[in-house]
Length: 225
Image (tube, rainbow, N blue to C red; front, top):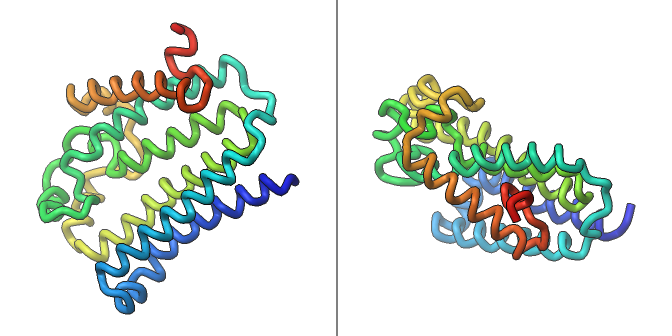
């Protein structure tokens, strides 16, 4: 295995591993030692440092060393990223997983919007984005990095359930009872006009920008030009 790929694996392992460690087993000890503010600073510094390592290792790895999955892969990726953007667009409204004063009240309320689909819309948006890149079978660097981000999001979502249950008690248990970890795709069209419209705009804009960022046309623009 090439040195660039080994470095990329190490960088992604560091990024994901430190996130999991600082979010769960090391969190209490770090907060006790550094204080809440110090912990946030340390968390941010480590996160950006390891993410920067991922970026440098990614750009150093071969850009297109796999055969690709052709138009079929692009169609699947395009279809996966649309619901991902809808979930992402709606994940900021009424989300009890976010650290806000309204979190407990939101957890006790009837699920609305994208939370009818899943209680982890942001995490599933990242997970779907990761899967959409993996099915393209474009390069080892893409497979490795997308897999790492998908694991971080979807395993992290399960870990977040445990953490929030410990912090919020009955409120989070009620939220879990009224929502689902696994997406209920039949409810996607009932999330409301704002997430549907905003997600579609994000999907079109993001796939259009893909050409300028990655040099590869993506989404509907691959066929529309």
